[in-house]
Amino acid sequence: MSKHSIEVGRELAYMLQPGSDMLLHDQVSGSPVGQQLLALRSEWPQHDRKVKWVTLRDANDRLWIYLIGRDQILDGNASVATLYMFKDLSDYYYEEKGEILWLVLMSLFFICCGAGVGYYLAGRSIKPIREMFKRQREFVADASHELRTPLTVMGIAAEGMEGDTDSNFSEFTVDTLKTMRIEIKRMNNLVAALLSLARNDAGAGDLKLEQVNFNVLFEQTLGTLSMLAEQKGLKLEQRLAQERLIIWGDRMRLEQLLTILVDNAIKYSARGTVTVSALRQNRQLVIKVEDEGIGIDTQDIERIFERFYRVDKARTRAEGGFGLGLPIAKLIVEQHQGTIEVESKKNGGSSFIVKLPLTVQY
Image 1 (cartoon, rainbow, N blue to C red):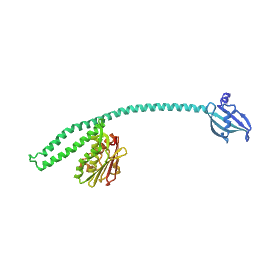
Image 2 (image 1 turned 60 degrees about the vertical axis):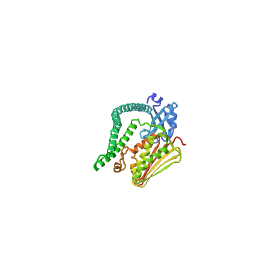
Image 3 (image 1 turned 120 degrees about the horizontal axis):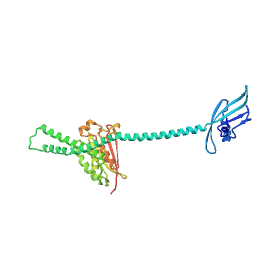
Image 4 (image 1 turned 180 degrees about the vertical axis):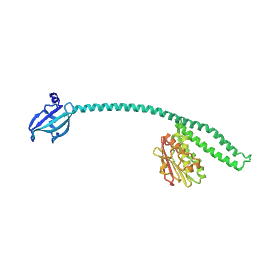
């Protein structure tokens, strides 16, 4: 070992008389961290031909890593000294640490570059899809708007022909006109629903906000819908709060919301009672629509607010449903900063609960 290596503590030797602690040679005490190494004597190898790692820090907080080995110095077959050899590996550690840091920095650089390139490429690949959805929304809105006028004209024409008592129409023609009028009404409902959703998707579904007396709206809407319930032999029970319920919202949208929920309850009920209530709970208007109909399976509850999803496809098709009522209802509720929930079980009826914030109580 060179003198310089010993002075800087890079390589050291420490010899004891065999079987005792009598010191024969000491290069450790004068090294930069000699006293600390001696203080760690218990961590040195306790058996011959063994090595151990020791780490420590000097006064400048520099890390020192020593590999310590132990063996016997022999004179023939007799041991004349127990030798401890110290090898400083700190430089290797700092070199490896620097290389690791460099690799980490390079990895981060390439990750950032990859993410940037990926974001750019993803943006370019998604752009046609965005344009496609935009054109699809525009087509639905434009088509729905353009279909309203001819459907209205066709409906008026069919009603006019049915009311023409001077013409001697055959029974087949009368039945055909009736069917046409029903289908035209269904198409009008579908076009109106599609137009409403398309306008909202395009960001044009703004509300016409005003203070709405929900008591009046409730009575007027339920008065109209009661005839639908009577036609199916159902009882429509109303529970309205005695106090005035004033809500800040869009009158037409709120009427549409109530109509959708009650019409849906009537549509899915073959008998029994449909109960509609509007009550005040703290600062909320709670609308509850309960029926004794076919109910909803658990797996269907999670999907009933999806567009065009129908629980009983055969029934809703016969009744004139398109699977757009509940999605529109949820949209109206969310536009009014409210929530909508459903409680139901198969063949056990359903309950839709809507909660909307009230503004003023008179």
